[in-house]
Length: 243
Image (cartoon, rainbow, N blue to C red; front, side, top):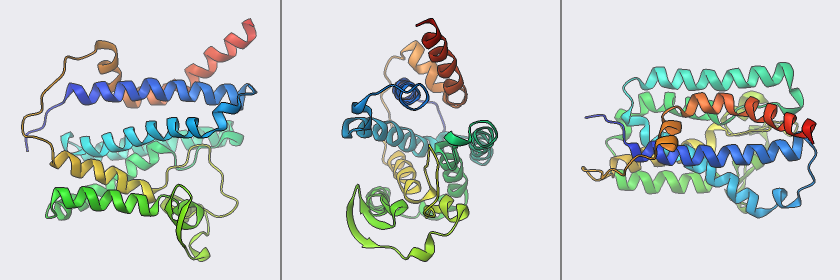
């Protein structure tokens, strides 16, 4: 398969990065600097947060086949997620990140390495629809149920929810805590939806003119993700001190 880099994907990723940084700046203001902002705890903010993570996960699955070294990329992203967990556990335990989005993206990339040759036998259209339906069915698995956004279909056995290892899969125990939690289930199926959607793309993808800043940000999204929170914290702390 011929591999190329599509500027439109980098541009979309750059837009998602801007949205993510604004959302995380808002999170810092509320949870680290004590801003009283009721709107941030409401439905609109939840939709905002979901739009960011859905975009990143779908894009990551869509772009998986464009990479030349998926195994190395998966290990790199997973290691970055592990590094965030280690740093927050050592220095910010009240804001621990365990099984965050980078851990999920890295694990999904690694899982797809052996699965891709098998899944390629499936119809791309059926695979995309089936993967997305499985994502919707498992959306509330972290809360002990099958269903989507509180629409409960069936309860899952309590014995699945044992410890931090089961939490990685999607079954967190009652005392589990993480400020950024994206377990393998259900989110792998959204990643897989993106992968199948790539197979449905037109042979000729019409490019858009690049937007220099956004496109460049999209090309370096992992580095920006790793650095943005410390930078935001320093900037906001300086702003509050100046005020």
